[in-house]
Length: 476
Image (cartoon, rainbow, N blue to C red; front, side, top):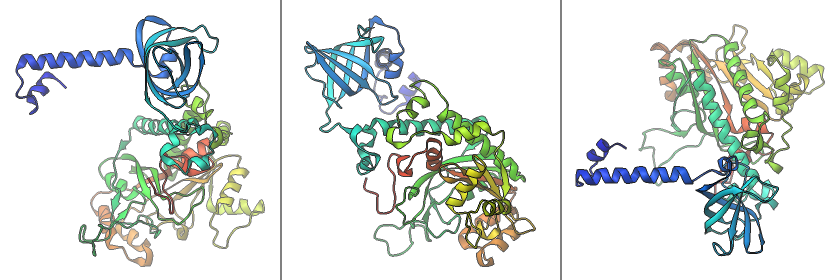
């Protein structure tokens, strides 16, 4: 916010130049003050003692005890698993209740105790908020799920949210480094991407017709079709977007709203190329979340997940022993299942138990490719043998983690593969792209919550996001 910007501002046009300069100097002074005094708990815990500078800590009292006229409080700011000890004389603040949110200022000095190298000797301490019932550590994940707005108060769950944040940032870094372009795709859409019949319909409250948009509109099931459109001009794109499915299911593996990582690569005619990207991504994320480190890194949070996970690291362990994830065709997968005595339905579709049986047989993740056309959506490229140029990535703990394919490249073929041989009106734009320079492409999608569930072995997928929505549950 430069001086020129200030002079252009309609709010400041009435100020004279000397007043503008004075305001700018005051702003700089204020910013510098905040930068020198406010520290995160993690940063402060690594700092050497410096009794000449005043520092400030903001956070919550995790535990405390009184000795003589002093209160010794261990304070966390929720940004890591770490705490710092704040020593508060009774004359500065008479009480620091468990769970209260405080702001403390003072000198960072060497500690006389053996549990920490340094501590904050407070010259000021203010209790900003109190918690009437701070016993979150005694609550199970099932109990905390009944009070979603308060779950971040649990040390275990806040560690899980930090792990999710880390996974999000690592995902963006991975695809940015690979020269992909991030695209924001719409939540409102005119099409049901996979024809699953489980979409939420968007209606204007009180309206008797579809006059707002003039036709049916849904909450998005997938961003794939829109990403394909963008590949007509940008060769590598990805998104992490919200997706919605109206599944009337309350199991530990289902949610009605979730995030999807989806990628699309144009001018691509090799299924192996898409699987290579998926494998590289999964390996990178496993290293990011499951490798060892100190308390300020992902491993520190992984060790704090408590009842949410035992962190056996099945996926990370199996990947470290594999040079390459095995790739088998669907027909071969059926033969393997028959050989190991796993019962299959007549359709040959892979159930979750069948997927996990294959993972067990191959001692880790496995790609299953070339599914029969009747088991996959119409937009997937097909071979002369009636198989799809598609894959599912099966992983420990969850079964199917990712699904991808090459896409049909011509309008004529797309129309032939549509259900009943007829292209829906809402998808004519999708077909028309193929006559306007939309190249052959391929891509995959991964449910972001399912990825987190796989990497960290979270027992219930509803515990992988702060505010899950599922059948008959959308209260806040």
